[in-house]
Image (cartoon, rainbow, N blue to C red; front, side, top):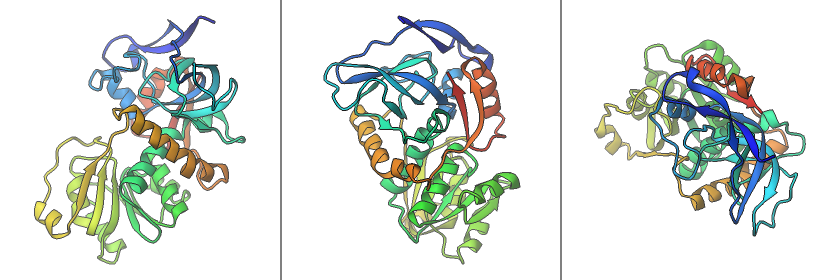
Length: 329
């Protein structure tokens, strides 16, 4: 096979601009492998790229979206000796996973647990890597601490709740529907908080007996950041990952100073290769074993074929899903 099928962004616009096309197989360079993609998943970045406001990095296809994958190695590049053709792998890429084949660095992969399906595997990398990296690696969340997770029904939100539970931390989660909160409870969420007007700080303070939370995983942005600051404990760490509610916030800096808060931003897609490799290796060491033993599991809302990618994008834009939307090749 010298060509492949891929979902292509034909122009900036709505879901209707996605189209199945034939493309040449990607070329494998030294240190890289080619993966036969069996499944991928939809992420907010894919929607932004399709709309023309979040261009792909220079080292990936500019018009084929997709940040995560599960599949089998189909070709080894020169110098790759830690994998063999046929190995089942999953991981993150800067783009291009809405295709039958993609190329990824041989050190930026993780081996799939034996009993994990390709559908479930495709729903894991972006959500669990983002959540673990932001909460644990960057913010130092540990056993006995309290973490606040916004948009707890999102892919990263459902992953964050499970990770917190697995490492012995307690979680408070926010959502705009009671159904999402109830479903998050079944994943290990300790305290649900229903958000109706963008305000949640008082409820979070009440749930923490007035102390506040130690770590905040901010997946919404905008006005949520002011609420985060208001319900943060002394010395809390706030990590901003998503900007669904906007990129600007009116924050009480006196509270930031008095509480000695640490506020940091985090992105994954634009990191240099060596940083991505380090993140993947941490994922393989710390997260995959928890998936293997069943302490962490994929949360799949719906599955679609590649030909139904436009429908999947429309469903994500509705904000009605719980967990991940998976595309099956």
